[in-house]
Image 1 (tube, rainbow, N blue to C red):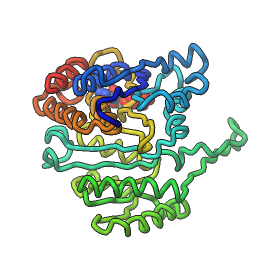
Image 2: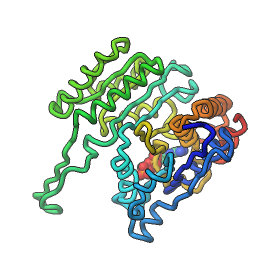
Image 3: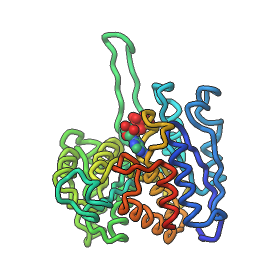
Image 4: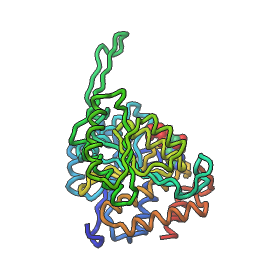
Length: 351
Ligand code: ATP
């Protein structure tokens, strides 16, 4: 997209701290690109909307997103009043599946030594991008229950792996390693325990790796990757993995560089309308207190800018977040004393 055109963003603040952090991301994106660069449409989809209307989204809304917007920005979904998370599943998993957002990209960078719970790791030592497959695996929604609520209850969830689905995410990981000079791709699977689905992952990974001879490729069991992320995270460049394993490994990796208050993510189909959301949830325990860390949402905004072709502006946001962290202008989760909006203002002051 031409950086001079208006980027149309469907903005879903969602539940809990979602709206609080989303507004800070809007502030930072507008400061980086100029307010005229965007049209943000604030949409009301959240637990309140679901409880009032009985619907997570109006009929056909996901298809309208595809037609009317360049990107979707989501704060967070999740509310104790909706214990089965129905609206969150409909919106988030619905968008991932219906918009075919097959890449869940989660960068993990250590921005300050003090944020790392491990000894002796310095700023820049840890710089990983995790590619999580986002449309298949145990999240494909295939399964069922028998004799529910009785002692004979049976529940089955099928794990889906297709050659096409695995190949496209593995290729995206290798392309990142090539274009960003990361030089390494590690595939995490459990093909020892799940030989069919993860055997396919293994075969596809080896085949794709031959097209990238300059990239070091390794296959490891996901439990070993979890261990190694704690023992020596500096050994990783790009990690590619399946849906459920990626969910777990990316939270673990985020914790190693300062926690989920700093972890951005993008649900992407290259060239198509994609969805951007911080990794964290709605955090009901801190909602309304003004202490939610907005940096994950702001870094997520930078990922959105990259997706719509505003690389230089995205870089400026990343640099502003670096500066804010280096100067200790943070919320209490990172050891600071600032409020959510004061951190947003601090980021904007560097833009
Ligand atoms: P959900 O069900 O929506 O995922 P959750 O409470 O299970 O909600 P998170 O919302 O991710 O999961 O919260 C996990 C912990 O991290 C909570 O203690 C929360 O306060 C904290 N947390 C999450 N996001 C932030 C943030 N942006 N800033 C500060 N703390 C956060």
